[in-house]
Amino acid sequence: MEQPDLGELMSGAIALRQLGKRYGRKWAVRGLDLVVEPGQIYGLLGPNGAGKSTTIRMLVGLIRPTAGEVFVWGRKIGVNGVAEDGGVGALVEGPAFYEYFSGYRNLAMLAGLSKKVSGTELEWALHQVRLWGRHRDKVGSYSHGMRQRLAIAQALVPRPRLLVLDEPAQGLDPQGLTEVRELLKELVAQGTTVLLSSHLLHEVEQICTHVGIIAKGELIASGTVAELLASDEGYEVTVASAQAATAALAQMALVREFSQDAEDTFTVWLHEDEPQQLNAGLVDAGVGVKGLRKKRTELEDVYLQLAADEQPLLAAAGVGERGEAP
Image (cartoon, rainbow, N blue to C red; front, top):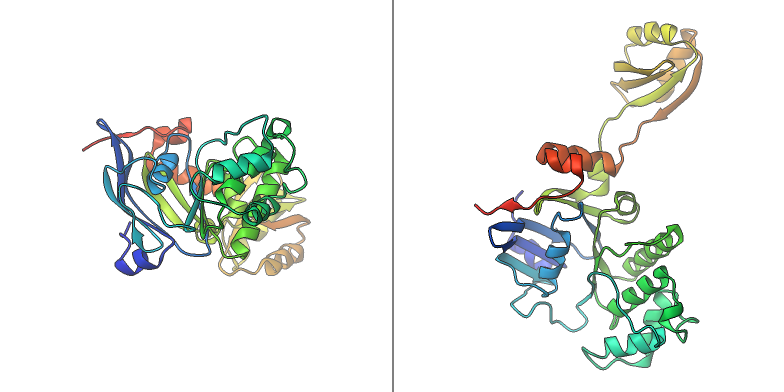
């Protein structure tokens, strides 16, 4: 992939150029080029061990890169990591709190470790994650989803322009997933840029505007979700008579190609996207059409295909293996 140019480095919320991290002879991340523009929800996607968390730790300064550069809001990050006040908020790994303190007291203590935080800022963050009203309860009484939202509240103090989240949906039930999804969309609508890592493909597809797919520490694909899903999967047609449908489809000029998937189901590719003409042509030929729908590519399909092309073992096992250093 092309390296980010100087304009991208200076204008992006995040720009990583040839970023790498090596442990001994093993590369956890290698040659990573990635740009996140303001206003995006960018999903860093890959299986456990692919290098997502290592990338995020380098971005926020928890570990030092072996190679490459990190830019945040146009500023090159040095050995001390992200230091711009209000520039970045981060949640890395699972949240840890004092069980016998309230959510509010936990938030006040943890946020106060970096700078003095006002009660107004704490209240704002707790309202954002919908914990105001439960903020005086002990964290020991919180559900897993509430703890995750409290951790996001901690990352929101004081109101960062960039929010970096490592597996924010880890362990959440369907209700918790919905709450986090809606929260992030609201924050972006208010001007926040979000980078999140995940191995939950369905969630990434629902929430993210842009996606980067990592395998064995290398970026193998990136773009908007729409771009990655853009493909001609054809139309699924269910008919009353497969024999009659086969004869009719073979004679239709509109049909580019077709295949029989089951006893009464076909996939049909068209020269022009005119499904109504396909339906009318079958009916005119005396074929009973029970159903006709556009086949849709899922992000999971794209990911598995890319993983199969790049890493056959990864596709089979679902686990990334770190590559040897050259």
